[in-house]
Image (cartoon, rainbow, N blue to C red; front, side, top):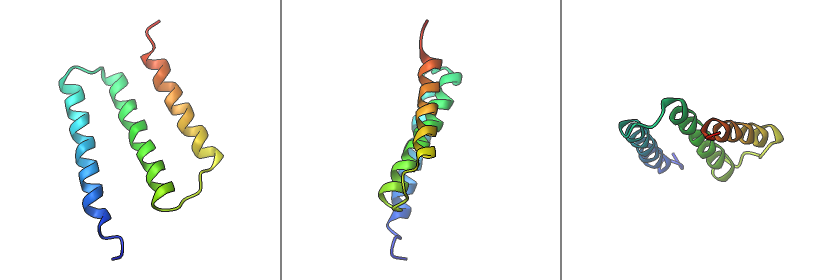
Length: 80
């Protein structure tokens, strides 16, 4: 019960993410780009939360996965 304050904070953050997802597609964002951006954004918040709040270690695998995901989004959004 010591971290009970986290519940309302998580609820607010999840609601904000859902609203951003909704408004992105309402404003004609391409699905092929919007979904990966949303997914990597959630992963980034999870990484930050895990390191800052849960005191999880930053591993090479974690950093490499995030870099590759971000690179993939960059490549998909790049207008050649």
